[in-house]
Amino acid sequence: MNTRAQHGPGVAGPDAAAPETAFVARHLSKTYGQRLVLDDVTFAVRTGEIHALLGQNGSGKSTLIKILAGQVAPDARGRFPSGPSLSAGDRQHELPVSPSVSAALGFVFVHQDLGLVPTATVTETLGLGHFLTNRLGRLRWKEQTSLTKKVLEQYQIDAAPWALTRDLSEVDRAILAIVRGVSFLRRDHSAAKVLVLDEPTAFLPADVVHRVFRILRDLAGEGHAIVFVSHRLDEVFEVCDRASILRDGVLVGTRDLADTAKHELVHAILGRHLQPTRRSSDAHANRVAIEVSHLSGKRAKNVTLSAREGEVVGLTGLLGSGFEEIAYLGFGASRGTGTVTIGDREFAQHKLSPHRCIELGMGLLPADRRAASGVPAASAAENLTLVEVGQAKNRSRVRRTEREDAAAVMRDAGVRPPLAGMPFSAFSGGNQQKILFMKWMSMGPTVLWLHEPTNGVDVGAKESIHHLIVRAAESGCCVLIASTEYEDLADLCDRVLVFHDGRVTTELAGENLNHRQLLHVCMSAE
Ligand SMILES: Nc1ncnc2c1ncn2[C@@H]1O[C@H](COP(=O)(O)OP(=O)(O)OP(=O)(O)O)[C@@H](O)[C@H]1O
Image (cartoon, rainbow, N blue to C red; front, side, top):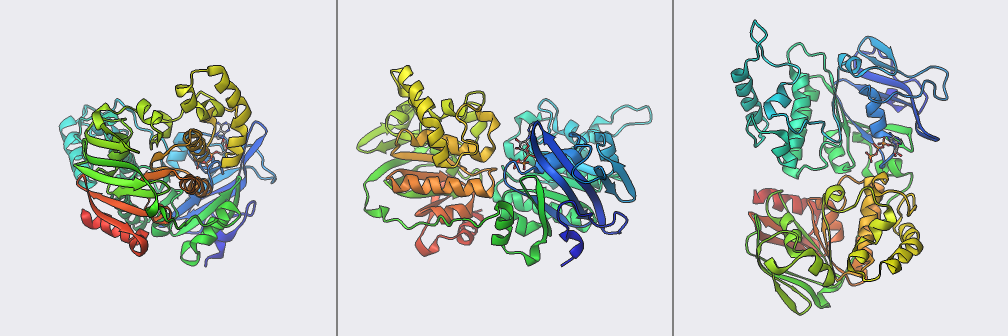
């Protein structure tokens, strides 16, 4: 193992002049109000490596990246006498730098929010900063468009060059942002040497993730450096060479991943080991909680399935295979055909509405928690009691419940901080998800649909959400999880239904249910 990367916080990293060092950021501290969110971090990355930057939600990863990008100024002095600096190649700058100096030092960023202009076309997005022009400075649109077409083909993006980025699917927007970053590095005479990707795979299905990884490996092979932020540790082990770990703003170590086990990495991130969530259930003896028959929608075709009280059932497949639609059809949140039976009451799908489903004891936690689930400006307590408010005749009773119970519920679910009056938007993604989960649990549901319940949440929050799911099932709730997180499905579910082309083609349970088998079945269906 190379000891140069093993420095802790505050210890000078490798010499910037060493040939294999892509950049070193030294003595980064950042205080917001009274809170120190980065504490004298020194972060070094080599050329030709894919370097993971890991840590729980709120550990300081994005702040560090924004300092590199020139979007956030670090504190002038940390606990050490020398101020913050950034060295890349043979250039060294005191921090803060402006975004243009960051670019001149060779940094290219794909931020968490992707940074695409919604009203820009695909061609404008890819061409920005290096449009083809003639000798008079006029744009050569025809050539630019055919260049865009080639890039779209090369990276298998399903879009027209003139399409607006806001009209692309979430997946295509994410790939477009990554490809734009990559094309900066590959451009002739480009100064760009370091690609920084802040959670690029959060919304990407497994097959697309592998496509992105191939691109990243090629870039690293060409001598570029890549910083990769992710909460998905399997992906980190698959594509990264080394990992630096932030815990509460402190860089607790840099590890060579070939010499590190997953549990060691988890321990470094959390400062403790995970509690296992695998469970055994005997739900097969329980009553059927929900039955859907011949359900069809935009993608789902004639799907029939049933699940029992206390059972955890996974629905999976490649993105677009139809599994992700069932939750919304079953909850009456999108239109289709077929029937849904809850208890002994059968409903035509087109007669279902979310309001009716809630009355019947169903809940749905959608994947897009910000836009489709939580109310950002409302407090945690208000979000927690939203279902009750919708159903209640007496609003003042609800307000009392809100005041009295919210903090206790939040503590019980491990929400940090358990401040009932804090706006929902101020919580990290993982804590938002715990609040929304508890919102549904407060009505004692018989059936709970979850769509990608741990998307973008850190390894600790994921553990808490898994425990909440297990607890819900143990209390008799039937939980149906639509997800492409194969390892989680294998850990949590009694059985998993795999979709292909809108239909359930395989059911895995017992010994056959493990993440490798799930991945294999999903990919081979393709
Ligand atoms: N502009 C800001 N003002 C006040 N506090 C901030 C600001 N930006 C970030 N923070 C706080 O700084 C801490 C670190 O945030 P940061 O976004 O860097 O974490 P992160 O590790 O990237 O988290 P995630 O994995 O959720 O993206 C958090 O507690 C966050 O609430």
